[in-house]
Length: 267
Image (cartoon, rainbow, N blue to C red; front, side, top):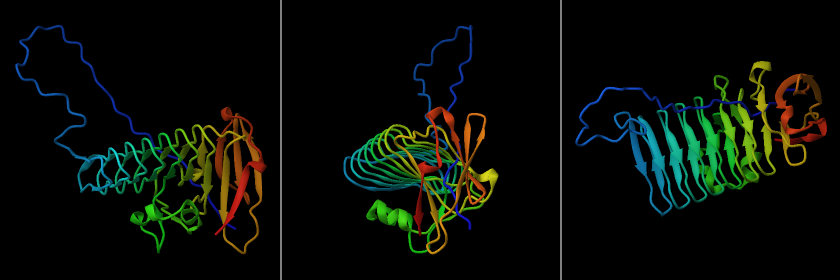
């Protein structure tokens, strides 16, 4: 039997380069402000205090929802999506995206590419891998309850690269893709595992599992036998196997991890 885990990730970084220049020059009477990011490459889209649908194009976008429960779609390009406040839906789409929920109970979907998802405060849903569901589109997500969302069968992208998922504060739910890195943060978090983790190189990494608050949930096909969970040690890391297949690496810094910390969901 085959099942899998959602997990691992990629981290985008911004570098500020300072140069030491001892020469003295006349100041520019009307200097241009430093771009953040380069306006020649990035399309900036700002929302308002009302709930809105904000959508980027093929370019690299910087989209901020501000107040209200917004639906934000990055589409193509390496986008930065910021929910700000409100219960938002943020979908990165193609490209290497930075998705920030901010304040509120947000749903975040990275899409294709090496994405970084940051929940912020609130009870968030973070979906790291590109998921394919025949009867479910990203724009349908705001109308679903968490129960509906997690009862759907998912199919992962075998070419997906690892993403970084950070729940922040709140009781968060994670659907982690192959090679994702999951940091639950504060609160009682649930990390869902599915059949799209297909080997040792695709196992999810969990950085801060708290045995008192957090749970890993293994999904399996209804009507089949319950997966057998076994554990092994690799230094300070607990290796989690389901039916003999490595699905997760749990960093020991967050505390102990036991087979009883794994729950199951039939789909």
